[in-house]
Image (cartoon, rainbow, N blue to C red; front, top):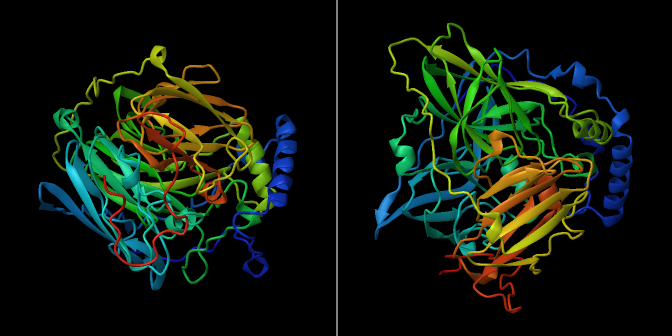
Length: 543
């Protein structure tokens, strides 16, 4: 475990003696009040100019990177009846994030982050999951194409002392996915306290490419999260009126659970698998020397060709794979998160400053120091062609659906565990129009599917978004059109989710449900109790 030199003081943390916990979700009157306030702020947005937009606060610029980056180990499977079987235990744990201070965490297999699961397209996999927590949890396979019964959403709950054995055949192409809880009303807190891990998929195409592939050496997974700590080194998790709008934003950065991290990497072309694992904060990634890097993959897989970038904005839940060349470096460089100053950010900053005591996204962070390791290395040449993508045809779209994101609702509705919001036909190609009518950004995530971004307010999306995705940022007063084809996983009784991936908003009820059926008949009805499984073994809904 990485060992930081000292515990940094909490910056702009709420006065714990003044905390007032609100019912969960927040009362409707409070939601209305906040919505009105945000709409007023939106009207004033042209006049708002956050001072940190011009003079960003370099929050952790004083830190010396002195803790070796933790690389989550690969989880070894065993073979059973032709399946790769992985064992995963959810439970309490401890981590020495700061020297001499033991942080209480939630963990997978006693680790934070959890071990990396790796499989190949076409593999049959099974997960033996045991919950040793004193609370209910779930394990969601974010970005995975699989039956709804195996998705790990709010309906596949694992009670204290219970277990779950989901299984499926890997249908995704090569991609960087992840797993995390999706517990009703508790997702944000359980992720915040440590429950997350990578799920990496390879396929024949990725096997054939000359890309960095030595896990943890030149192919490096990075889950980036922001936290608040108390003086004893314990996580501070706040879910009250202070953080309802923008979500909980921390002032300390952990990468793979490591504070003030560095990694010694070979002085050659290396691959970074970036995951924004935060509850609410976006990261505008770039390097301290402003070097060009190459984006090679989005959420759901490799792009058709590399894209040169100097900045890359990821919202919670989004992933990206980038290549950076260290071969000519003599000194370390730092992966950074830079302030971004789009118009809607000024509104969000102003709201968050009023409600959360000044914490906002007008901040700059150092994320990870990369130290080029001398030696003789063979550096791969970046392939000119990475993938062949079969684009979906708008001419065969069966239906267009519209989703309006408001303050904390979708289509003016909050999550109802027993309500089916949409019924989709298997094999159908659809367009989902997602409109953000609120003055703050929302990340829109769809379970069980990968989609393609058609346009933003009628404009072609940037080249960096022209790949498969499952999570997309929608900024205020923006409409994003997504095209997707639903797979042959029919289940009229168990739904998939669509929701805001700002986890605070999700837990407040900014989520809906859809089922995929062979023939829409009006008979779809959820058969999963909202309080879930309390004790004992549970193998999910077999199919």
